[in-house]
Image (tube, rainbow, N blue to C red):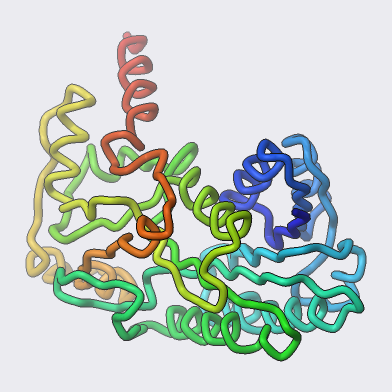
Length: 301
């Protein structure tokens, strides 16, 4: 199977590595020459192109599937719209109007589209309630990914990622140093985020569907922080309730929304399809980071 990975970065490169290892033909697409070089260092083909410019995408060969994994780089809603809505529509049209269009188009989204559910469980049947300009953009992009490809005979799939973590993104200090605010963490290791997309593509699953990509256990933040501290040989960090955190005067509006948002995301659909998680919970997923922390701590004077 030949797969173009648009915005082949943190998850995309791992997806490419997994596809290559399974005997498939990934093509990573990045805007910069440095990004292309990084892809090629992983052993598969890299192509320099911009998802927001249709003529640019003409250099990408014909493929069986397309994965849209581009990032807006954490910028504002206007920048997010340029990538996730305008870029997504551009990419779908660029591939859909080809003489030999792909059969599948996978868009990687975020569980941020759910908004706050007071700690209750959510799944693919739960109505989304985006609460910020950026998550409204993500929700619009999900609709485009499921509806627009059908115009070209392409089946769209939305892979809705929980919070990504893994190599270079463990952020241990955030939880070891505290303070830690109450609520739930919904997480997915980078390798499983990529693995789930690979699985949906290569096993030809979830056409015209949304699938939540999250691990087995939504983590209570306080429980997670205490476990992490214990594993690292440190004292538990300071804890704060939601009300205590919101009472602080220096919080941005984005931080206030994040602090007051809590939900538990179910992976029953992903598990039901047959995907086996490499890192079922944070306990397995953070093992390498903890071991590295303890080694480095042991070397300190």
